[in-house]
Length: 176
Image 1 (spheres, rainbow, N blue to C red):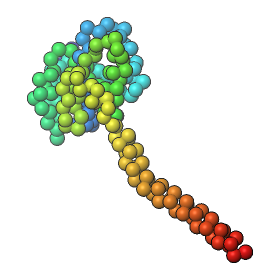
Image 2: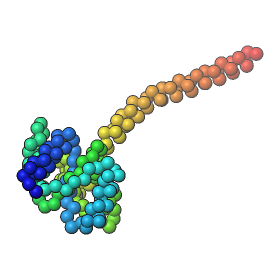
Image 3: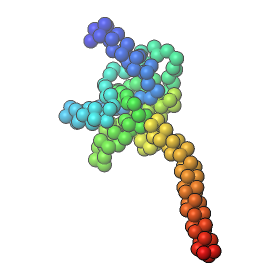
């Protein structure tokens, strides 16, 4: 790979890291090519960008991102083969890894996840990460919580109106 090609890859990574608040790093070494292709297809279906890149290029890109500082803990994990995963939903790569691995596969192994300046190191965080709610899920929860009191109020007013109408009808029948 020429110096110019490396520069282009670094620039692309800098742009990617600058425009996202979360990304995943995984180790997909020793996975046969046909399985890597299956992972790529699954990622594509789930809207996850899956790319294998040299660690030195990733490190240079992370160091060039303006306005963000990445911990030494994260940079120290850039050893061995590294797969990067980017997605619109913070939990999508974790869910995809769990789905792909199922019960019979051990790889890809999660090296780390960077979620809103927090670093989750190690494969044992996969369960926690897959249970994180995405931005859209959180918005839906807030909307539901905001609607709940209004729904209860409308329900109470509607039931009160029918109770009042029933009471008036009963009083009218007694007088008549």
